[in-house]
Length: 75
Image (cartoon, rainbow, N blue to C red; front, side):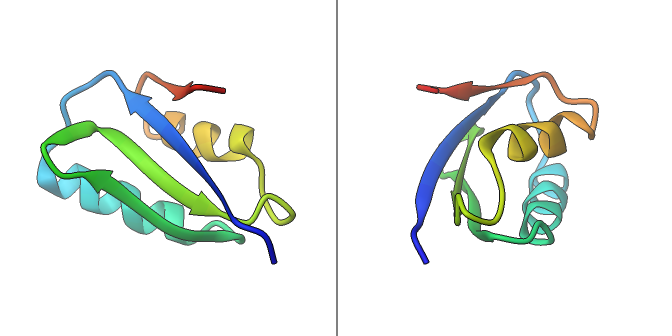
């Protein structure tokens, strides 16, 4: 299994509960290993995932499904 990381920038300011809910939801995606927000940079979500099991587009779509405006960083 290979692993990749993607950084997702979320435009809105999320509460701690919103961040926790989003991290938990991302964990439910097959192939996602470790979604986490960067301490002190609560608008950046780093997701470690298996690119053979899911795509960056699917990860971004999941964040956007919550109604958040977000984009991939460096992709």
